[in-house]
Length: 145
Picture 1 (spheres, rainbow, N blue to C red):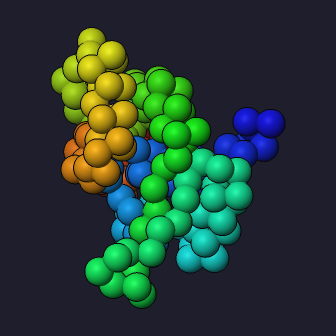
Picture 2 (cartoon, rainbow, N blue to C red):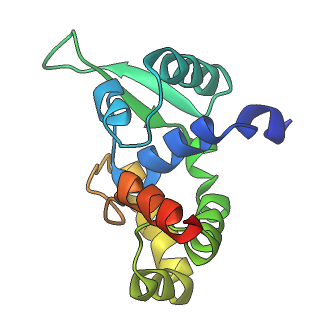
Picture 3 (cartoon, helix red, strand yellow):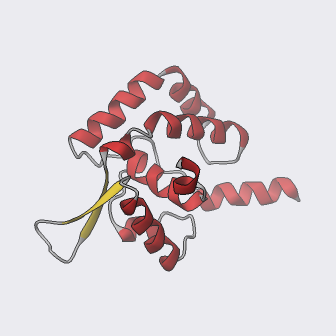
């Protein structure tokens, strides 16, 4: 069942961005630098909502603006996502510094507690700095040349 919900990279990236980058809006996801098409993003947000991983909320101050938020089921993915982030940064160009990855590895318990606290308190401050995905892809191309 879980692979059916997360069998594509876009769903995991949406969950990652909600959890660690503090993204909440369609526009923030769209401008993340990953290059996701608007129709794919809309589809993944609908699928994740249907699976109970995130929910869609209309902003109180502006009824035209929709924010997305992880559900408890979604935030429960934090340990898995943290391990994927660490693994990916170790084995794939990500733009994350080695020092930051070392800190993530040493402080797993704190990072997971902080992710849950920020979720509970609706704190959208990024948990980890934004990676420059386009620069990381450029590094991959240069290494291949």
